[in-house]
Length: 61
Image 1 (cartoon, rainbow, N blue to C red):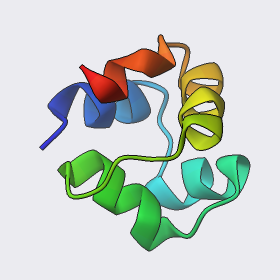
Image 2 (image 1 turned 180 degrees about the vertical axis):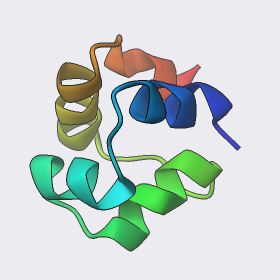
Image 3 (image 1 turned 180 degrees about the horizontal axis):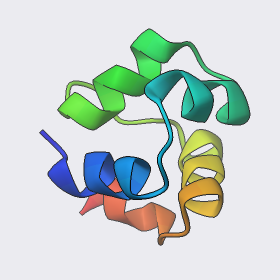
């Protein structure tokens, strides 16, 4: 589980659906990123990082 990602999203009062819509993936795919069940592609990681204001490479640490 990526608690840091969940906290970033909730800190901006956003739903999973809102983030998913902004980055161009399904809500299910985004939920899998938060749960740590799947890593987003580099292009998608950059979109998430830009939208939620964090270094996208954090997904791959």
